[in-house]
Amino acid sequence: MGGIEQVIDQVARGAVEHGIKTDVLSLTHLQVPRTVEVNGYLVHRAKINIEVASTSMSLSSFLRFAQLAKEADVIHYHYPWPFMDLVHFVTRVKKPTLVTYHSDIIRQKHLFKLYRPLKKKFLSSVDRIVATSPNYKATSKVLENYADKVNIIPIGLNKSTYPKPELSRMQSWREKLGEKFFLFVGVLRYYKGLHILIEAAKGVDYPIVIVGAGPIENELKEQVARLGLKNIYFLGKVSDEDKVALLTLCYGVVFPSHLRSEAFGISLLEGAMYGKPMISSEIGTGTTFINIDGETGLAVPPGDPQALRKAMQYLWNNPEIAGEMGIRAEERYWQYFTADQMVDAYVHLYKELASTH
Image: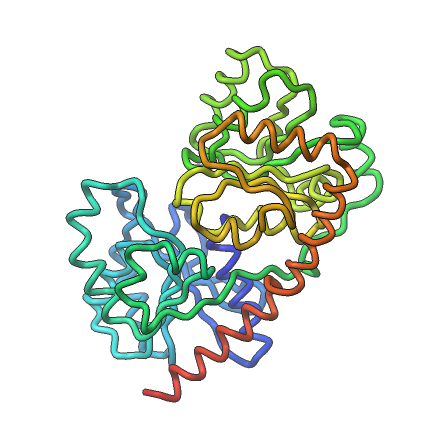
């Protein structure tokens, strides 16, 4: 599961506990059963026929969506997914609608010009738009056009759903990586700023552990080899138990995403949840709603390896301050970012929308 899937899972399983039946429609390349139960809710899968500019499309999803929409009281979209805007209009939805606005579209500039009229029509047609942080609402040129119908509901995580790793697993990682290391967790994508992190690792000897796989994995490994770095560990995809073990053991979490495609940063929030000091970039998104500079960690200018290196050195050389930042990071998680708070806010919004139609 990527970040958005995690959010959908947390909202759906939480809504079930409030007595709200939830159906999730998703697309897949795999030959799998059409409908499956996950954590108390139903997931319906439609087959992907084509992908254009990272957008999956499915012919069978039109009928499947129409069937599910007919039964629903409220329809909850997750943006950006231009194909779903199309499905919304083709199936002529007449139900209350909300959309969680995860991110502006950053990369597909030419295709975006073609898509813009549909996007405007879609966002104008939905009843409510949810931004995941006040930072994103304040800095999104798109959302400023819909300010009167934007709610802010921060993404939340339920710590009790995370596994508790065995001591032997913890010990095994400690032996491999040492007692003190920085950790990055995430899909290895262009906007994650990992090339900047690798550049920042030059001339320092502390271990930096990178967890995750993704499209730019090989070029990152080539960059490490070219620079002759021995302090970067690529672990690839790991199990949830191993991820929790690494989050528990690490000294601090580094999250160098340098573009607004990183709208929130769920693995950054996981670092806060496990009481770790954080280093992130100031990109005007939810990352700086999670990580408050000088309080829960350090925020550096995006795309600046020297500033990132300096931030890591500061935390590394000041363990007492780093420890205090980690404590405040976890306090901030409990104050703003639990799944219960997120689910309660969505359930309230669902009921409000259902009662007005």
